[in-house]
Image: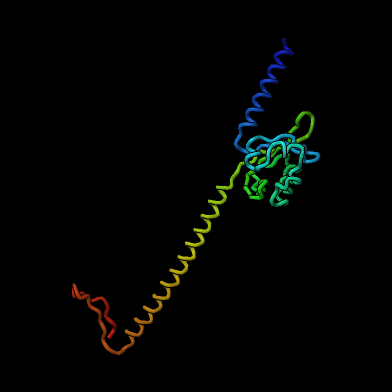
Amino acid sequence: TARKRTEDALAESEQRYRAAFQTSIDAVSITRLADDIYLDVNQGFVEATGHARDEVVGRTSASLDIWVDPADRDRLERALRTDGYCRNLEAGFRRKDGSVVWGLMSATLIDFGGTPCLLSVTRNITDLKLASEELARHRDHLEQLVEARTAEVQRVNRRLVETQFAMDSAGIGIHWVDADTGRLLYVNRF
């Protein structure tokens, strides 16, 4: 009975793992560490990459040309060698149709059936990245408008200073009066 309970607990644990693995909206994959072969991917991975599961399992990320920038894969490998895990690696991933999605990847080394593997979870941040880039473009545009307006105000201010200097140096009395109130608005020093 103890063996039966252990088998039941193991089956239940496997069922929970499989449910969590398959229902995650993030792209989850398990790759063999020795040769980078995909052993399993979830539906989130299929949807993120556009590759069917049977097109991925048994192949490598290099053969699928998934990494847009191989330097990102190198950063992942360095983190794994150094720490045994990697957190929040932002990278571009190429879909089957050639389009690019941006992901935030976290990965850790695991033992899968006695085989050293890499478990990675990648969240699609494409919309967030595009919105951030659009916001940066708007900010840059606003900064350009502010710079242009500031230059215009400085130009007008210089003209006003020059005009006031000319009026103060004219040698005759000059004054401006508000026509509605009769109030003096400006009087030169003469």
